Length: 67
Image (tube, rainbow, N blue to C red; front, side, top):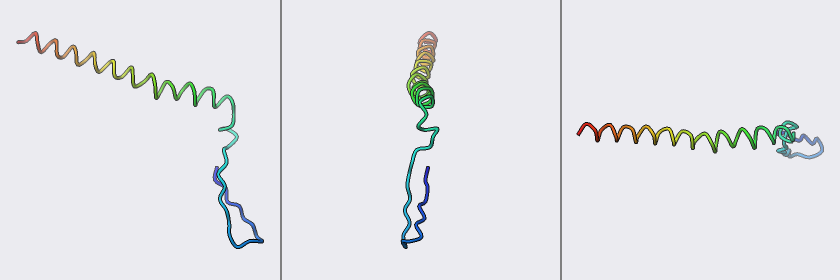
């Protein structure tokens, strides 16, 4: 969360970046960051790669049978 510090006694102002309460929640960390992120960034691409590889192997086998 970006928040501007307005200090009336000084001529300059500062920006502070702080995590929100949701970001600090242990449930959020457990379920979203660890679980959902692992599925989307880890398992998902591997499954897609396996599917595409199977499709390529089938297409190559079919092309070899036509010869």
